[in-house]
Length: 293
Image (cartoon, rainbow, N blue to C red; front, side, top):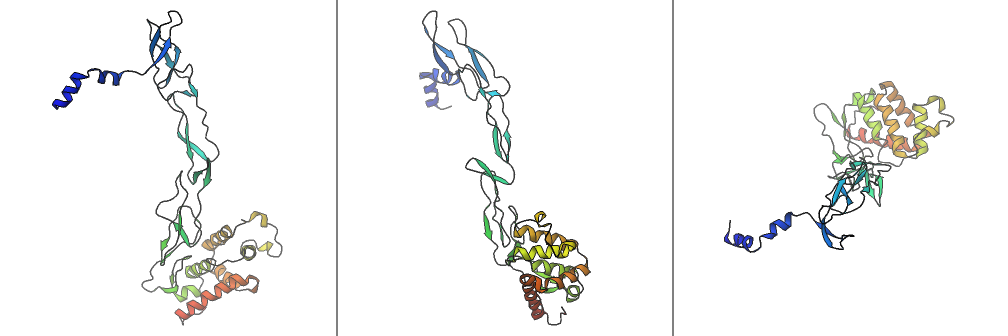
């Protein structure tokens, strides 16, 4: 211990004692008129009686759903009046020493006192290194060259294109919207997974009208509704979710269904989709002249 520190303690012995003392407040005794220094009540308690010349301040614990956060001489505790609203959850529950603290639920962030859903990064875009938090929105970035994102997500980042190897050749070069499609011409012609991947790629990256997407859904999923559009109310209204409906069907379709779909998509009824698919097939033929499509 330094000589300077010892000197301070000797000169001011009351410093440590004062720092450790409970805070006080002034109160005038009604009987004697004397101004008293009453001890305050610690957090989690409140005052039920002032001190007197012979008695200390009387403090009692806060009742349920009430609190005092600081040293005080309140005559009642504060009510835990912070209730979590829609899209919020409790972060810290009400206790004798604190009010309830709420935060936005997963997938939401606070904006002007309301919890708003995180922004979804659309196809061709991914989430930056830091995803959205209860306090900050998702930040999206365009997928750099050699990376892609085929879905709308508030948490997924762009993914690198796969590299074709072995017997699998590059059937379709990757874009910002879909992965590189690797496979064989035989699998493509026979309606295998390679055709499934090519058909899925044909639905990305282009502004296909929602009407064409709905027609295609009725044609391949609701065959009994292909002429009239009863049942449209059950379909998503946005383009992205409509594409997702088709992709779900693609994931479980048989090889024969995939080949039939390829023919259907090239039908003049679906000009925008057919144009995109023909462009993809032309690209595959140029890269692999022996492919029979």
